[in-house]
Image 1 (tube, helix red, strand yellow):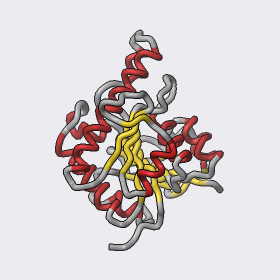
Image 2 (tube, rainbow, N blue to C red):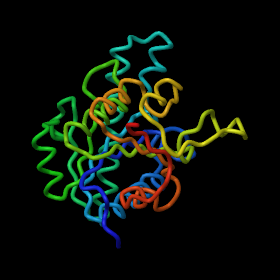
Image 3 (tube, rainbow, N blue to C red):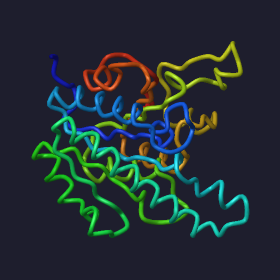
Length: 240
């Protein structure tokens, strides 16, 4: 198997990817598919950190829009990401991969607290580190958590795996047959065109730290492996 072109990556997964076609909850077939793709990529020797969302269980923004206190709803969303992290850990360990879950909200009975130097040491020792709990602060998305953890751990790229489309388009390809797919974008163009690949805070963090973002379709078998091998898939966001 060809080696990865990256030493260390941060893989960003949406909670919805774990739900499969159900749209909610954790669907065993989907989480096993994701674990299998991660295992394929890991076999190339790349170090992998993972940030996972919680939208398949609870969406803080949606609850806030219906009248719930925003901070409280965001904390509930953070707990949902921790549930997903534990589920993904179980699926990966069933494939004999060593993992650690670190959470931004301390819950010592089930996971380690997030400690940057410890996370880096785990990665260096060949463990997959799953980061739960977002940033640990309300009003920030898991996209921002992914950018933050990637920068903190010295990852070379964020790989945002989607479960609907195979890259970034100028408009929704599901509802517009004439939607144009971008192969490359700059950070500024992504912000100016208001393309909803990640929130503006996350993209700004990546721009300030020259951290590329690759987005691709997780449902296509072997795409995580292709991404770490440097094959041209999806859409890459980087500096001019």
